Image 1 (cartoon, helix red, strand yellow):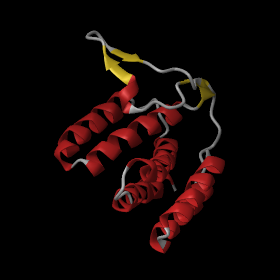
Image 2 (image 1 turned 120 degrees about the vertical axis):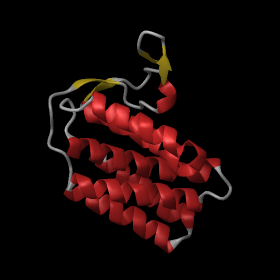
Image 3 (image 1 turned 90 degrees about the horizontal axis):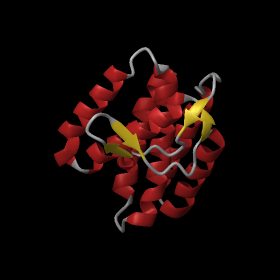
Length: 160
């Protein structure tokens, strides 16, 4: 994940032509390098557990799109999920309250199961990934990438 984070930051530096954005991405990778989580027992993980992969089945959640599943830490999927809902709240202010409620419910429901520092680390790394993807999807993508990187840096500090 750290190797990929370096690639995502390098890509942002190249495509952004914005020194502040490149610096923010590079500094975030530096924080991630210093705070890497300790290895944990591997579990079955989805690998790309975005919010859109979770369905309400009535009696519980269902998960779709298992094409990148494998083994890894639970915090990988949890961090990815939280990063994708964070993105919704950051980029769509009208959803901020719903996002905060979903995040609180998720964190309450997983308390004692997940390592909070590892969760913060994976969430910050995935926010960097989402920031890097912005240039492919939006014409005015730099402010969106800045918002995601700002949130990633804030979260990464709690991983230290």
